[in-house]
Amino acid sequence: MGRLIVIEGIDGAGKRTLTAALEHALDGRVARMAFPRYDTDVYGELIRDGLHGRLGPFGDEVYGMAMLYALDRRAAAPDVRAALDTHEYVLLDRYVASNAAFGAARLHQDARGEFVSWVRAIELERFAVPVPHAHLLLRVPPAVAAERSAHRARTEADRGRDTWESDDALQSRVAAVYDGLAEDGWLAPWHVVDGTTAPDAADLAKKLAE
Image (cartoon, rainbow, N blue to C red; front, side, top):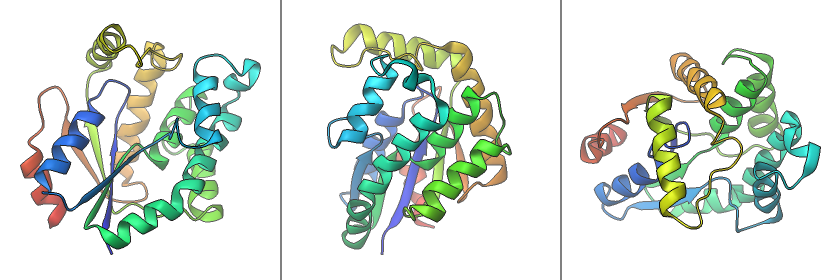
């Protein structure tokens, strides 16, 4: 049985870059997935529409959007389990903690608020998605992450900023919720990584193997 490793952080933190570096450092013993799965099922498509203002008032409904994220993971759970059966590591770019952090931040709650408890009850207890073995939190100042996100939108035709990415105040609140989740060891141990410089993927790979 493999180990489920989740990489979390605000938009622009460098999650995709770290995931690729870890895949290389772990020498092919890895399966990779990213959430939400925009191009895989209807839930991902609806999430994209909501983030870009194409679902009308529903996109502003915190619990409704969170349920779409949860349903996307529920649909993906068999694939995650299959990957864990055949690989030493499964690296996920975002997972349940993203749902908790963004929803809580949108409601101006913290990591110990009602919304975080609700996400845990829905995703882990009711939907029984696989539980992570560890989280890697890429901690980056929100201003730095915002500049990275804006640069990506300018240089990558398919990576335009959505309404959450472009909300700097929201991203700052999300960062605070993530810090609280890490402090509490929510769902699994958290390793905080300085995302302002290129993380040492080889060193992180060693820690994950311990």
